[in-house]
Image (cartoon, rainbow, N blue to C red; front, top):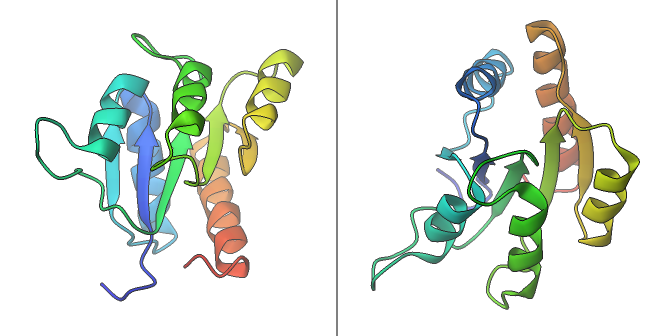
Length: 143
């Protein structure tokens, strides 16, 4: 992989949504490394490393796709911890959720998310959402 490769961490507890994201990335020919965490605690461990081990997700060029409604540690709580960690606070986060509640959207933006996207209902819309996300990061010169 070249030095412009982006490491994507998907924090999602729903296996169907994980599968849809993987398929949508593949359909759009997005071959960036994808790491999966099923909740916020697991994501933090993957980002920080544990017991002297290196992080699972390399510590450079990272993007987090974050669901809000998860067990153990939900998305908002994860964002609160992430934004207070001096090593992790700069990682861009895009919320990808079913929650269309204003409270969640406002709280997420107050925690400096780069975007807030509703999960599409159909697979074709998932493909379009991933294409849009990829185009956005390409325009931002992240890729």
